[in-house]
Image (cartoon, rainbow, N blue to C red; front, side):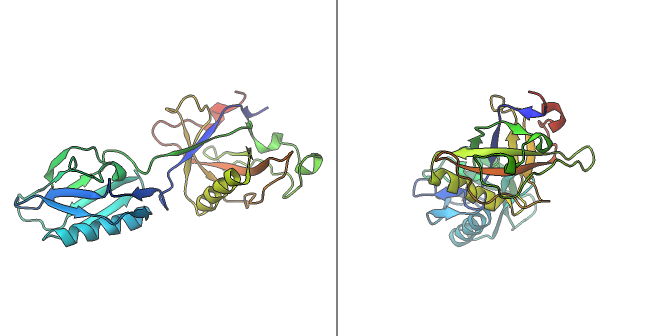
Length: 257
């Protein structure tokens, strides 16, 4: 039987994953050509990646004499900062160690960054949110039909695994929660993931160096209704591999664990 006994999923919720407060809302730098240290302040709030990029650009454009570009690269999940004025041989320098620095929130070390016109973040943001799966993850052809189970109310019947070439594999997972709040929080994630965003799946949650990039299966509508089971609540979801990046492993290696 194809089964993964221990698993965890993780995702970076860039839609509302950036929390800016009065203790992490400043960036300090010197513009092209040197001069005095400039401080820009972002209004506290909860931001998406696009909103935070726009707010940071507006704050830097307002505080400085120059014009700036700020964006988050969707491929490596890192912010980029660029000064658009570009006189020959000039650079701008960022003091990420200033008081109330925004550095960690946008992925930069709290240190001096100098000698360039464009800076890429030191690490991806926002932080990964983890959810440990409480039930084994199985290949769908080995799952019992909902209709055959007396303790569950049938929603969609059996789903079988399909293969689209060697790179794609589908699995199903039942996720159980102790209360409505936990289930609703995960429903929010399902709603976000259904828009096509990929997330990471650690088939062995004890080894975070090995993961598979997956998404909610896009060929069938995921279950979006709680299933009552002995006063607990559950979702059944389809997991679909979307590609192997550096450090990942193939789902074919994960059977019979």
